[in-house]
Image (cartoon, rainbow, N blue to C red; front, side):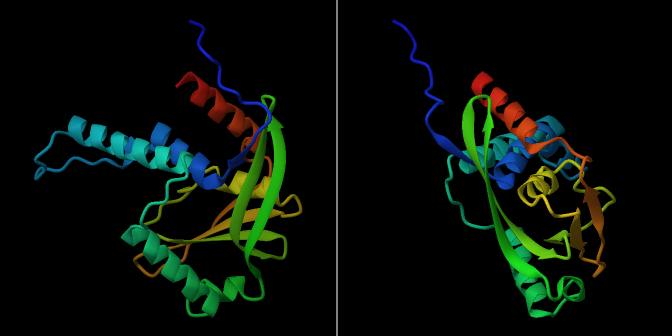
Length: 200
């Protein structure tokens, strides 16, 4: 019996920065967030295995477009973002007079497959893309491994730079800036992603 090949042609596939970041987190980041404490009832290896299983589940949900209930961190971020738009946070003066929730779309062909790149950015103002974050803590270059800034810069070719605005639990606002040519092209990232999907 001949195994039927996947029909990748004649379809357009939706690709978003959230999906790529979910994949990236599963592949490279989830283990980095696991910590070992003296009070742990589980060994570090078991905690890592659980973290990988959860990251894989989240990635598969994103891949299959299965909607899940937002957790407390997501809800906290949404609430903070809304307060920023209303003018009630330290972020508000920076984004004042910007355009909020701008949608970008672009069709690209990678490995003979057609993709619709889709993203909704937080703020666009004066050629700068701003992304609002509510975080527990912040360290420099926290978002260097994210596919988000490259994705949005590709969607909005006139934008000069991408600026993350993380606000932490110490009530401190940080800025993290990225420019063009500081990241791989999104088409290259999609190619890596599709290769990995086919192999797995």
